[in-house]
Amino acid sequence: DTDGGMLHQSWERHATSLANAAEDDLSTALVAVMREENIPPISTSQGLVLLGFDTRPHSQRLVAIAIEGIVAVGGTPTNLGLLTTPQLHHLV
Image (tube, rainbow, N blue to C red; front, side, top):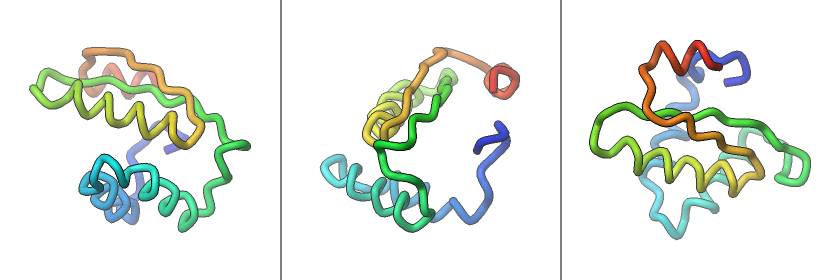
């Protein structure tokens, strides 16, 4: 979200679609979301995305997958490492 808040509930179906996409289909799923939400093509969109993770065992893998997706759509990921949710919200 551009204001650092939570994404609108309408994005839940996109999150579900991306989370359930096979690794080989992730780029296709991302492009579908971009098309449906009228997100500009890769060549014109270069947003900075801040990421952090918590202590759950799967968190670092989720960040790695998110980084792949961010790069796939032309964004710039910055992994801030282990953070609490309030710390990440403050940074955004």
